[in-house]
Image (cartoon, rainbow over all chains, first blue to last red; front, side, top):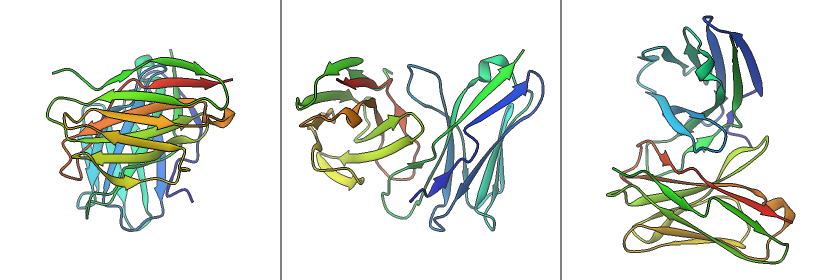
Amino acid sequence: DQQVKQNSPSLSVQEGRISILNCDYTNSMFDYFLWYKKYPAEGPTFLISISSIKDKNEDGRFTVFLNKSAKHLSLHIVPSQPGDSAVYFCAARSNSGNTPLVFGKGTRLSVIA
Amino acid sequence: KAGVTQTPRYLIKTRGQQVTLSCSPISGHRSVSWYQQTPGQGLQFLFEYFSETQRNKGNFPGRFSGRQFSNSRSEMNVSTLELGDSALYLCASSLGGGGEKLFFGSGTQLSVL
């Protein structure tokens, strides 16, 4: 039972344009959401997070939007750069109790110069 | 501050053997989580240890086990290896208070022949 779903396995975007990565979740207890970025042969690195009390969080070129009623979040990268090419994982957890972080299957982003 | 260290980086085993993977968390972090990454399956949670006690467990068979030592270092063991156990095994640490983000190591790439 996939509680966190990233339905697009891959995405190609032109350099300088916007990249939009989507994520859906099914568990209504999730109230903290994170995005991780992973390069080959490296571990995932934290990118940005959002709490359920907010609907938007911004950090430089990266913005995460949360739509709680739709159980949907998205990561926007503007402008996209070739160095952004990586696999992006969406993750979620419930902050009540020490529950594990649940990850989606990832979306491979390719930014073409 | 040193990051999360996993050893070894690469491992080749044959079916039926057992393997032990090691993880040293970031200094001061008391929680260690283990994840399995296979192509197309994202990161699947194995277990989490906090203060030498297993705090959470994923949906993996009993062949997968782990432990944590008093210095927060953790080991993961897989017995009676199967071909399907070939994967990248990732260790992540956090302070352990709950709700915070995870910091990942580079992983151990296990190949079972």
